[in-house]
Amino acid sequence: MFDIGFAELLIVAVVALLVLGPERLPHALKTAGMWFGRIKRTLSSVQKEISDELRVEEMRQAAKEQQQKLEREAGSMTRPFSDSLRDEILTPAEPKIESPDVDAAAEQPRAAPEKKDHS
Image 1 (cartoon, rainbow, N blue to C red):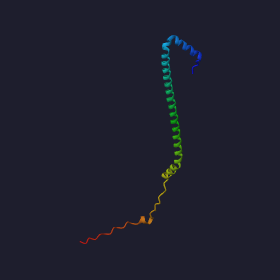
Image 2 (cartoon, rainbow, N blue to C red):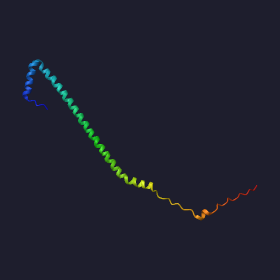
Image 3 (tube, rainbow, N blue to C red):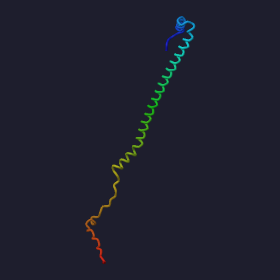
Image 4 (cartoon, rainbow, N blue to C red):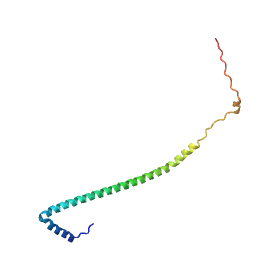
């Protein structure tokens, strides 16, 4: 990440020793170490959250593709059945209706027998 060699670190340590003095330098190094640790943990946490979110998005995309594939397969499986059902609905089997005889139509209806009153 940074191109810092041993010589640069030695120069920074000498300047820090001169500026802070031998009494405050250990406390300053401890504080700087704590801050660097916190920054590193925070960056690691953010990186983990981003990678988790990317993995979840990939899983959603894979699930969506799988769902589309299943819907296509289900559609191709049900197509023959729906086609035959539609054909049956559009062209139903013709019921067998017996045609009335022409002579029966010419017949006159019979009169109902009269009831005799026995009173």
